[in-house]
Image 1 (cartoon, rainbow, N blue to C red):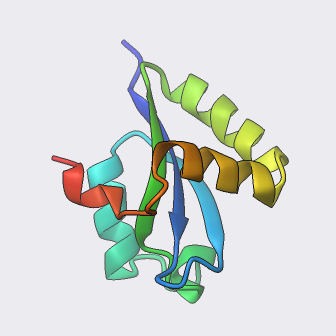
Image 2: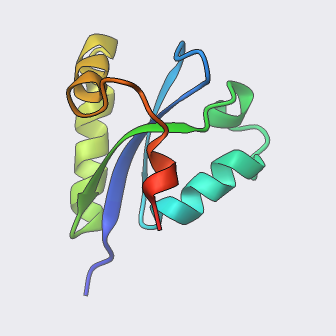
Length: 97
């Protein structure tokens, strides 16, 4: 059986930088982002730990394909995605179990 997958977008507290990522365990990945597990990573360097958008897939393969699609799009397309589902830019990680 294939692992589930998540495609997600993080930002910083001022919403100036966006990061698109993929994982099979979003709650665990958010803990890693907050803890700065990967000290030299882009997300750590820019303090990206506010989860403003995510999509869940039945397959990690589908999530990876979607991540590539989102990354290939413009910043405006990412902003449109976030604003459509999360217009207040709330931190969605508080809803993760």
